[in-house]
Length: 142
Image 1 (spheres, one colour):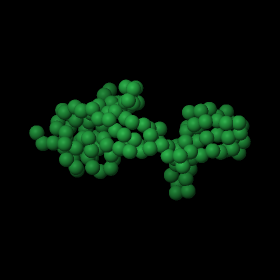
Image 2 (cartoon, helix red, strand yellow):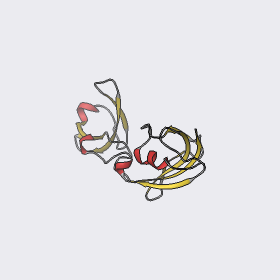
Image 3 (cartoon, rainbow, N blue to C red):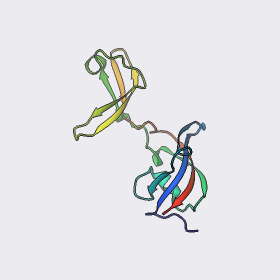
Image 4 (cartoon, rainbow, N blue to C red):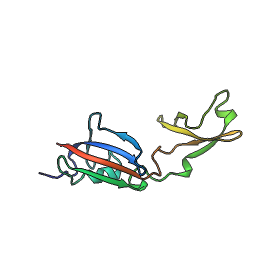
């Protein structure tokens, strides 16, 4: 069998877990995930792990934050005035909002903390700063 190399289109089944075995995502009950290896479509560590795999091979990998969604960045935490930004709203920790950017794109932020008159918004990816474990099975190479 020919192992996967950069440029191959592949299909994989995966289960993503935290180090305490809590599952955060899985394709096992859905269609397999399809992507081109080395094309930057996946997080770096996942992409590199699939390279060299053979058809039907299974493996488990553990990725440090730097190989996944990066470290949690303090500059993506923003404290705003509750009265100015969320006037007449019942804001709760964990609530998500889309914030328009100057370039026309939007960024999703999550309410991380609510203080007396302020709300702390977090613009980091929800998995930033976390060590992730993936069970991967290669199901197709094109």
